[in-house]
Length: 258
Image 1 (tube, one colour):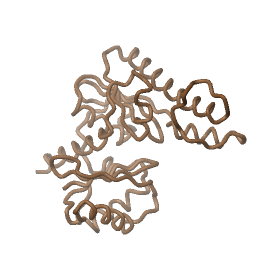
Image 2 (image 1 turned 90 degrees about the horizontal axis):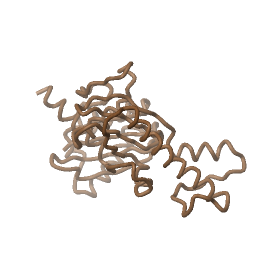
Image 3 (image 1 turned 120 degrees about the horizontal axis):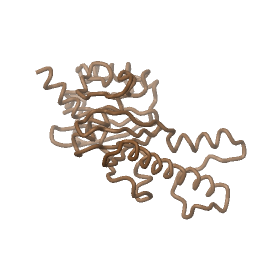
Image 4 (image 1 turned 60 degrees about the vertical axis):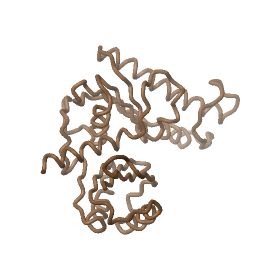
């Protein structure tokens, strides 16, 4: 069984693939100070609830945008799984062409998303990943990464509004009943939520116009479900896109080393 660890700035996903399907998934808050031993205790308890154990895992792939966490995640795999992990951006061969001016600057997480989208959907794709940042990445019909846009995420925007304006409270993000707010909280929720929708729709339109070809828009990430139903610019919502890309990278590396 393969353990895929996909770590963002806010949350970390642990997913188990049994060779046929993703049989279990768990999320935890990202904590760069968490040790290998702490990961082992936490994960072993969750595996036990599924009738599994750490010994059931015979492979590990890691994708992290938090460099200071990779050391502990790698040690967890070595110490408790007795496996050298495949780490995106380090020892993993991705097998994707990067058609941007400085290919070395393409984030590993964005490339994994491009791979996950390409193996599932045909044609030119625009992948929107909503997390701490919101990325818009163009994937060519042949699977090549062709660049994109990086914008602040919706949670980051809401937090910045609260921190920068002394009289504005911290509020939960949700879809407001109407655009025009009747009090401070509803006005903030409307501004952030509908402003975020306008950002997504505006960038989709501009990217489509500039690229000049038909593009299928695929959304993923922790905030994607929040905007589902709020815009008709997104064609597909795919919560498993990133770990599908990680699984494909794992398979490509097994073939290349066999």
